[in-house]
Length: 101
Image 1: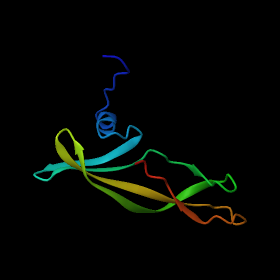
Image 2: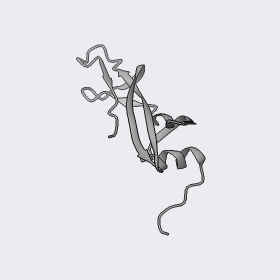
Image 3: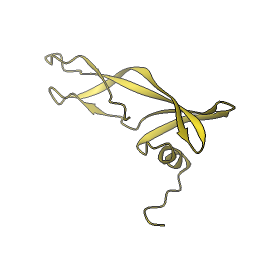
Image 4: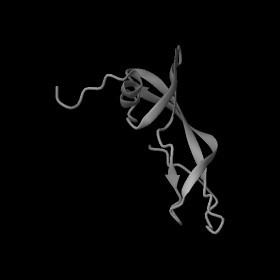
């Protein structure tokens, strides 16, 4: 076996579902499979238009249903942050994080 060893349970869960940079918020197991809620680890975002540090403003969910993981269906709920540029002179108002496929 090669590669790095991970001992943090949250990081292990994120790696196992294929999103090592995700913050795992919850995991529920039932007869339909695994239900995993995640979000990005980003606490800071910069506006792509003006470079100003922006603030998290809202969230929405992106759902991925029935992905196969360990022989079971994985139902992934990604909590996507919406960011607001705080620079009043900037034409960019609100944008959402990109969700990895």
